[in-house]
Image (cartoon, rainbow, N blue to C red; front, side):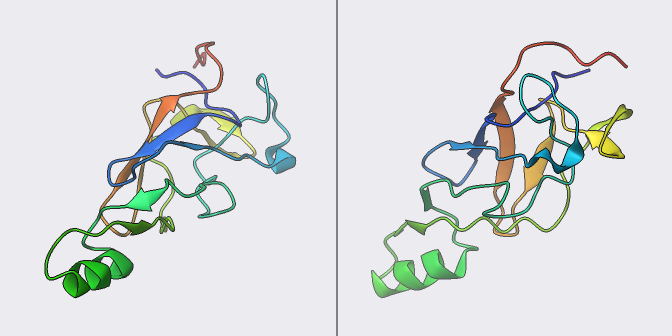
Length: 128
């Protein structure tokens, strides 16, 4: 059982160089200390802002810049590429008819990064 994640939660990508802050629109109509997140709050640039620079060679921009630099890893601006929802979520607690996002959930980036919750934005435990 994790802690419920809300708007403003701090996120970190394993290939990003800076943390980012989760954006949750009030469309779920559930409030914690601020709007509560669910597993479908995974939209790049809308819910998941960039993590500064990306260091993943699976990212085409990083691969091209690294090739141009004769193999020296060259980070490029991060543009999250998240296609699937957060996993695992909390199936016993629904937020906007979807499982609630909890602090131990992970989000996979198509470029190989794993996005995780560093700080959930609130510190009360989800009952369920």
